[in-house]
Image 1 (tube, helix red, strand yellow):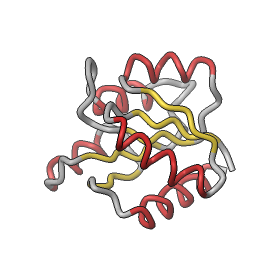
Image 2: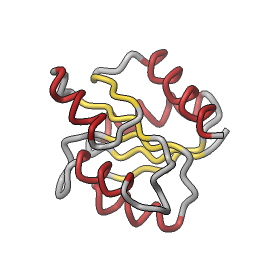
Image 3: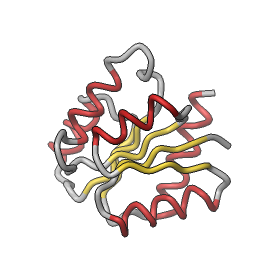
Image 4: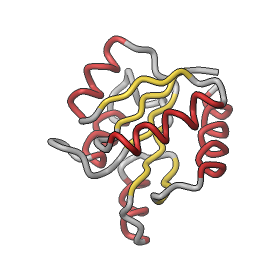
Length: 123
């Protein structure tokens, strides 16, 4: 069903996202920082990105903006998942190019449905 890149600095959250995705047949690769994510994207064909906002180094907002301005990566759907839950946070996530914004702790069914929807749209 494709490959997801989970960019999350929390081991626990990374594991939760990865398990949800693997349960529906998605291959998963992970990164714990924006810099590591960029390196992984150079060597892995990614179909969807699950992105935290608060990361070491560059924020998820910055990474999202960078990816969406890149010819190579701009069509890859991005799901931002963050504990930041105000309407302004969601606004900035979408303004920076996110295709979906979910608040942690995630509802696993909503997360899976969102990822499936984005993958189906990008085919």
